[in-house]
Length: 338
Image 1: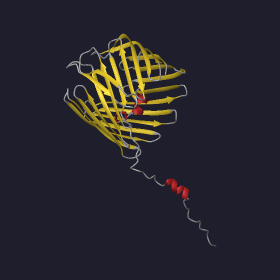
Image 2: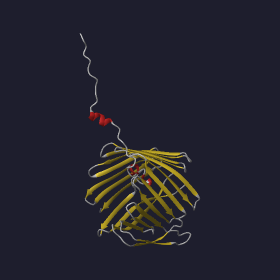
Image 3: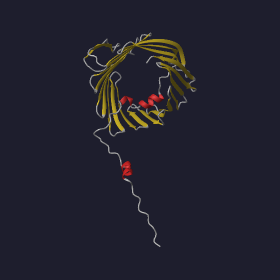
């Protein structure tokens, strides 16, 4: 009796198309994120703006271009000490801010004092452009003044400047950044007081992988550094690493579990001092609130909650617990305005 031999299994044309490797167009790669934001997702999940005490932020929009902000902070401030215990003193501050955003500005003048301890340098910048300009200023009751400027000189070229002035000697500083965005790369040049020069470059080498490097020179301290970075991202994960000649190694990984939940971890290692710190955290986004928390290798745990009570009204809770140092920080705040 003849045995029936089944015909060999064949793969359908649709399945063959599905398993066919995707062809990569290396002439049309995506533009990577800026070099300084290579750990952006991990920083957002693991390092929210923790605070201690009470904080109230109020923003008043005057028109489409101008808005004013008021911030009140009341709580203890840590004082440097040689003992193992943390020393805190009660403080309070009021901060007034003014914001200017104009998509089509033709003339802008800014006066900035950069180096106070060597000489008073007055820089007058006159910008003629028809692109978006953003200007932010903040002043505190203790005399500290800060200002930030961002101007899109063209579709791909952006100039950013920031300055901080204080009454303390050698603590005022200023910085200029010039960013250029290409089709599949970004580059940046940095100029700052104290003879600070820096540059970085990041390039997409595949649709998911980007590589970059940076170099800087601090003329005042006669120090230089060279660094490299890599970032790999998909729709569900982001992995990034950074190494510098100063001995610092930084690694981070973020996994998107669902549309609302993300898990993140990072590690910081200093080859010179042999110090290493690792942390693991979560980021949970609900319909009305966002909850972030983490625990690190030193035993310090923290949590940060932002809840939307109403349109333009947010409630904030912040907590950090360090049993080893006997340092406990709790804060609550309100954010009014958009």
